[in-house]
Image (cartoon, rainbow, N blue to C red; front, side, top):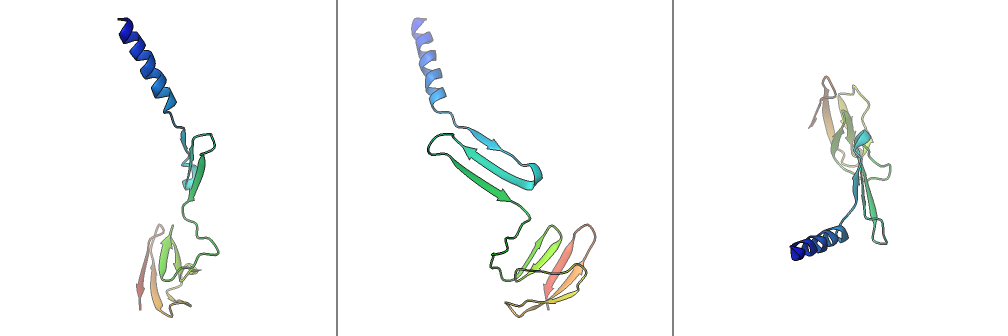
Length: 105
């Protein structure tokens, strides 16, 4: 019985040594991950629905009902848009509740 008690104590000590701390915050559509608290700790942040001003993109992106062509935001309601980088023209059909259909002309 003493061996079982000692084994339980050693096992509990080993489990406590191998713990990791992870915090996830999904409020407002972003994710923040923090691991550990020592020298090797790191933080990663991800924001959804955001395009940085220095991003280089070519083609079409639809994010949260907003349309971007070659990185440039298309004004709502515009039915045709010419991309500056690609030179392609796109037809845009705006629907309800942020639904958008885009096709190359």
